[in-house]
Image (tube, rainbow, N blue to C red):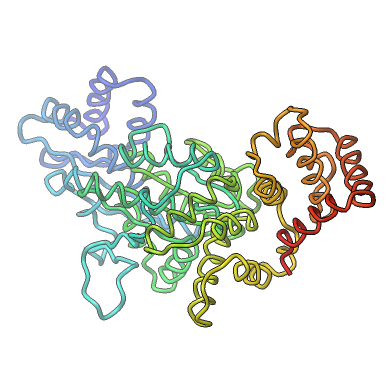
Length: 477
């Protein structure tokens, strides 16, 4: 008497149960249903295409041995896969049968996996209609390399994590790696640098950089053309997926849904995911909680506003790459004056070069001051406390570290008081902030310094001359 398909599969499950963990058995084998047994071929139904891929990737040897033991040397296994449309609850599932003899290459997941009943190849959303192109272009900018990325306190954690990911993509705890920070702080640069380094160290891996907007537009096109499965499979094939400005998925429920499924597949198959955002996951609005929870699985590394030394180093690196020389005082003035972000700093540098070239003028400190006034407009009228301290220290030939120290030497105290005076009159900083920049003084000390400077200006002509000269140096009119 022939065994029924249920009995054969039950016997197989008894063997499998002894060879895998309890959790793995519940996750990957309990959901399987035996459908039929005919001519030593057992047909089993699995709940999804990803389920099938996981079994083939991790348990094919165990399954083959088990089937041979129960059905003999002629025994074969055939999968019946329920392909459900993830974007519409109204679409009925359909079934695709795949014999084990036709299974995909384990090194190239999903490449030979049929997408639907009529299609045999995956449509690459990056291919422009009319152009024949098979390979996946990474979409990376070669200028955004680690070599061109200046390291500082502002980006050390994110850069180190990015380097670790590039060294071993998918093999670190930083998966996903979420890089977040304000506008113009280098998120995109770092994301490209990671991708470029991976391509250099692991040339066999498929790396893809895509903005969240482009991803969304491709998905919309896939819906219009009724090839969502192609879209999903294309992204599931990527070894390293870099999504820039992921916060723009907010409010786009269907886009979040499809990205959720792609994210799950990539993460569970050991592929690397790199994301950038203008804020950490806890502050993202309009995002599904299940997606936000996955963003927190790896490492969220922030990029902060670069400090003065880093800003100067960034400009010097730019000058070196471009083969241009600028007076040191001009470089320092740019770095002291523009404190918001790197993009604005580089924009000011480019504007200065353009202005000097078009007007056939030499690049001087005066020209830089005029350009900064136009470039940053109203914000440029408020010089930074750092720049004030630098100008005062240069005038009195004092190291800036001495100005910020606790020393009570008369010449240092006077320079410190003058710096406080100009900081109060030329910036919007609070007294406490000014005091903190000047060696950790309190607000009362700053008020005392301002009164002292005003009194000396009224009674000491030489001192008043100092103040007038410094005022001209600090003026950006």
